[in-house]
Length: 364
Ligand SMILES: Cc1cc2nc3c(=O)[nH]c(=O)nc-3n(C[C@H](O)[C@H](O)[C@H](O)COP(=O)(O)OP(=O)(O)OC[C@H]3O[C@@H](n4cnc5c(N)ncnc54)[C@H](O)[C@@H]3O)c2cc1C
Image 1 (cartoon, rainbow, N blue to C red):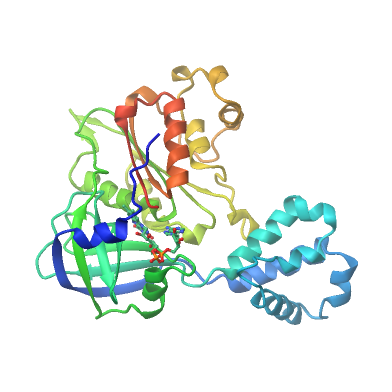
Image 2 (image 1 turned 90 degrees about the horizontal axis):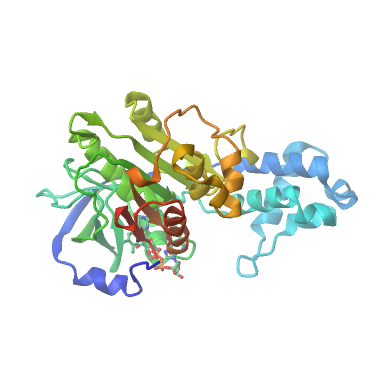
């Protein structure tokens, strides 16, 4: 499959038509949580349960001092070498197994800067004309990057949701320096990840992380404008959204609330790491495998599916959603990092969704 090239997106962003060079930032908020204390507690408990004699020798006597000790070791991590010092405290077998994965995931979470997920709202004197799913170029302190609009075109203000890329030029600046009252330049709009013409098809949005931004805009828009109905019938609208940790799912609370309010909106978050820190008992697999679980069995020849899909078909969905999807009766929208979108689109094709009903966009 082909992902649209975005290699020169920063230059391309500067070539877009100017919307305004004085959009006023009205809000900058962390969308994630600072879970450092939780992470250190869990690391300490994991090493207490599985650590080697070296761990018992080095471990300070009290739990609090022990967590400070772990924090000191993690703060000394060489980010370039990417070393993982706490694995040294695990027996060799555990380093490669589930316990090792857990310790590595918790270390990774500890090392992520906070905030890592920003919600940014801007206002302009005149309304910005765009279609749900499109993106704008945002320039702050002379650095332009493109961001999907995460709010509906029917709203007066524009929302973005931005993941902080470690060492990233603009996102580092946004996370540290951007504040309400600042102005940014907006160019655009651009992009052809757009809703298909209304039809009886069900809509399925597949994303990881901030890849959900254009879908937040589309989902708000289609419920506001009644596009979730066609010829008097309700269409089912699905969002399967992947992330590592629960607090790093953009708009998690809003999507859950919408699912409570609208019987035809089905929200399925899938969190690969959350169970290391909480009692998360929802989905944990890749987005495409989670989708497979919700396909109508009469519409699918499970025996002909590649191995991994067939395995996931055998494990029932973990939520209470009883509706099922038919690949030939749905339109699919996929967005996220290029590699992830490629595998999603390939998977959707394997499952039998017609390519003309698959829209996608890669973030680079
Ligand atoms: C159509 C489109 C829509 C986009 N919408 C959004 C959005 O809604 N929210 C959002 O957060 N981002 C979005 N992006 C990505 C965004 O444009 C920037 O690339 C990203 O914010 C990084 O900018 P930076 O200046 O901090 O990093 P840079 O200094 O440009 O890059 C630093 C390094 O990080 C790598 N990198 C770039 N982006 C990512 C990433 N997302 N994850 C991991 N590594 C990365 C680069 O390859 C580079 O090696 C979108 C991109 C495209 C093409």
